[in-house]
Amino acid sequence: MTPYTQIALDIADGIATLTLDRPDKMNAFTRQMMAEMIDALDVTDADDAVRAVIVTGRGERAFCAGADLTPEDGGHVFSDPEQVDDLADERVRDGGGRLTLRLFNSKKPLIGACNGVAVGVGATMQLPFDIRLASDNARFGFVFARRGIVPEAASSWFLPRLVGMQTALEWCMTGRIFDAAEAKERGLVRSLHPQGELMDAARGIAREIADNTSAVSVSMTRAMLWRLSATEHPMMAHRIDSKAIYRLSRGADAREGIASFLEKRPPAYPDTVSGDMPDFYPWWDEPGYR
Image 1: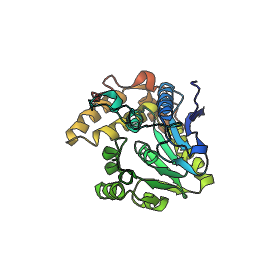
Image 2: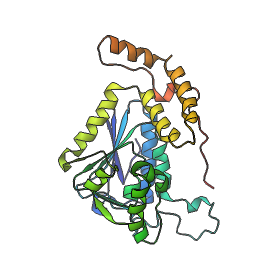
Image 3: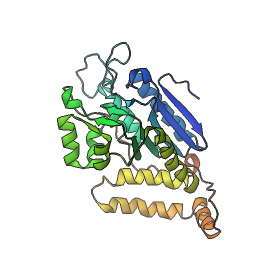
């Protein structure tokens, strides 16, 4: 497994735990952390034994306190510090956005366990997670307007879809820090837990996925819900639904799902994400940066 310096990746019993691992810096985000997280997602996507990925931070203070702006540690993580006039140049690209786009394309379900402060990119990187839990001492902030910049990490696309436009505008235009209770009330997180119970709660959800569901079904479902809910007409969803139901209903997982139900036993799904996704997957054209 790739050696990491700013994250940790642990895989056991079908569950991968990706931990932001700079507790002395409140797990602040750097270019190196971005690269390591992207690499870890490549690892979990390629490992058919991994059925779910939990993302959390080391320590009890912070999930991620935003971008590390100190030159010796993080430098300018939003783009290359060199002046670039061509805005289509790859060096202009936002590092947080590179990460969230990779999270968006994960083939495995992502569960966030926010264990403390999450501001700036520490908040926006959580938006592509499929399920978000938080400790009751967590705090969030989309603080960009208070730093003279704008929301990054493609959060202008993700955040309104999760919490609605009014809340997204309020949080981003005021840039204020808000507590875990407000995050739950407004729909940013699913549930709140005492610090010592957070990871057990996240593992419980991951375990439910790993023990009871088809990996191919979950991977397809994740892609369909994230991508098709943003299309202009339900016909777009109907086209993919129809193809997916047709292909998967004739597969080994569907046979096992029915047999295990009728025989009243736990399922043992044989199909894998690496080898048994439908022949039309992916059905979309991935846009380039320009």
